[in-house]
Amino acid sequence: MPSPSSRPGLSLLGLLLASLLGVAVAAPAQPAASATKVENSDLDAQLFYQLLIGEIELRSGEAGTAYQVMLDAARRTRDEQLYRRATEIALQARAGDQALAAVMAWRSALPKSIEAHRYLIQLLVALNRADESIEPLRSLIQLTAEAERPALIQSLPGFFSRTGDRARTPALVERVTQGWIDQPATRSASRIALARAWLGVPDNAKALPLLQQAHADDPSNEAVAMLAAGLAATLPEAEAIVTSFLQARPDSHGVRLNYVRVLTNAQRYGDATAQLQVVTRLAPDLAPPWLTLGALQVELRHPAEATVALKTYLQKLEASPSAPAAPAEDDEEEGGNPSDLREQGRT
Image (tube, rainbow, N blue to C red; front, top):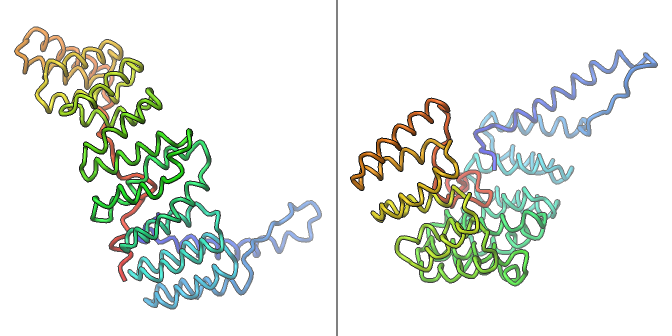
């Protein structure tokens, strides 16, 4: 969701000015027979005046009046940009209930709007009404293109990351995925979402069977292996998922490097070194793995091997100063959570 501080109202005023300039420029050209046909804006005089007054009121500190003017214009025109603007005016004024009313009107007027659904879900969560977000979340999944649904479903725990009570997240995700977990196209994604929710509690014992089932459904699923890698140091069953995945997809360097990080943290330096040697063999031009390998060889008291690895790292670094760093760990802030609405949405 765009932050209110970005002042999207300036774009509206720009639209008003552009419309006026368009009329001024087009008028002299009307007598010319060869002039290009002018496509007039849908902005009529009444709407122009209404939007101008709304923005003036907002800049005068009358956010309540500006909100009402903008919401009335949105309802009259069914324009998505105006619904968004009314919502953001309310958020800027920290009027959560008014923002929610604007978004609900937005969704009612434009029931297939993906953006309206996302605003509504985020506001409900920010206002500690996460239970009410179940229905719009299920509707959002239904509206999402079939090819994009698994990614959205996998990101579901991210929608609830700001509830402040992670213990509730698995139950919420389970309600959202009801039905989707039974469909072949979304079954693995639903299990991944539930596993992520349990990992956030944390309850690894409940997350592991879900990861095992998702891996059995799709042994090449990188998201499953990435999550399992986080448990590999303490749960042999999770490590089995990672090793099975890497056997099938040895070139998945992101998973392997994440696995190396976990092994290193567990002080399993020999195992971590073996995995890094695979990376440096399959992707010798990547500089960071050589540095990590050299550090591990030092830890293992292998000075000759450490010297070779570190010299290779310096050579790769000089050849490619912008060599990519090792990938970061899986980020839970997903699901289209572009801004923190908790503070903005307080009434």
